[in-house]
Length: 529
Image 1 (cartoon, rainbow, N blue to C red):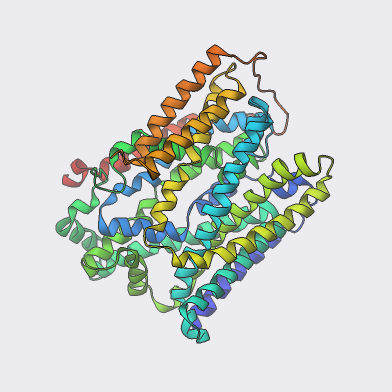
Image 2 (cartoon, helix red, strand yellow):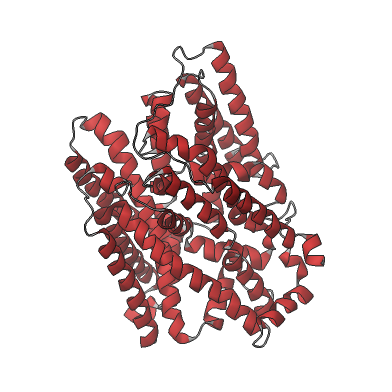
């Protein structure tokens, strides 16, 4: 391993840790609000940077570029399509969350329905995070970093041992941020790493186009246009991983859940110092998501044009990185990759601890617990969950191929079902708690049948959309038959200033228009012109 590579990796990683310490050393982490919500002090740019890094992971960097290598740009729907979801969350959901002064998303469900609904959703969230998010993040990240640093050769161990070493290295460092620094340390480190990710991530396609164009990125892009113009098509067919039709059905719902309901994402906006900063952060993130295809899909297309067909798709991105990056920059990029891994891991860990301590431990085990008790026990739970994830992650290597595709399908067991009851909870006043519970049971049961027993022939995103409509209608019917006796009223808890951002509407419209422009440019018409 080149000493320059190791040195640049250590320098950037330590720099991020030092900056995070400097910004958070005076924070009061003895209160639950200070620990779990950063003292409700996050500003727009910090929120946007944290959202971006929390969202990104090695699974995306490698997996989406593998789709670009194998198919076309249709998978960019996950990135570009997020923009409209972020705008909608800034307009409708965030003002209600901050008005209610909630710390976790299930808090709203308790006030709107009942404590039983809150606990069911908390368990669903924890199921998703502890079993379906934390271990895969560690595994995918460790696989990439172990390869970059040749941990197997460095320590003279087997590939399995190298994986264990890297998993525990990532897990321990991530745990320090999440467990002992609280949310603000996570958010600050995310922002610094976000800057590095934009620089490093955009560097790969630029250098890749230069390599393809013999020193000219313009010539490199022209070669793609000449040789493989079909790969620049964002309008995927039914055989592509993300058919364009799903943009109007399940993908929009999944994006709304992810950006507006998923605890580890919304916790950043819930920690905003006021509504203005929260909305500003979400809109900035909407614009930043439009850059996603540049470093998450186009490098895969560049790799196809440089190396040709025949590569295992998951190797396309790492091979391109090693091919185009100068040696001194490999360490910097590895540090950026490390930051993305840490961000996803410690964000999920922090949110898991928040959900467990505030929604399960306090109400059921110690209702009179002080803030100091909550923070202390939160750290203990965080240590336990981190160790659990570090023990499980290496075992994923024994799972058959296709595991990550399976994970995406599993997410459907809790993401859109939860979004459905949150949505109906906000748009109605009389739908009772029993309707939410019936909806969750029906949604999850039918979805399980379609994914595990009966192959309907429909894309799972279409199935999620159909079930959203079905269960929303079911909740409305129950609300008509057995309406809630006392109408729900969202009370202002005076947690933060609720003055909206004055540029919300023009900037929100601009973000949506920019999304449409990006799609138009990479449509068959745009490519032809």
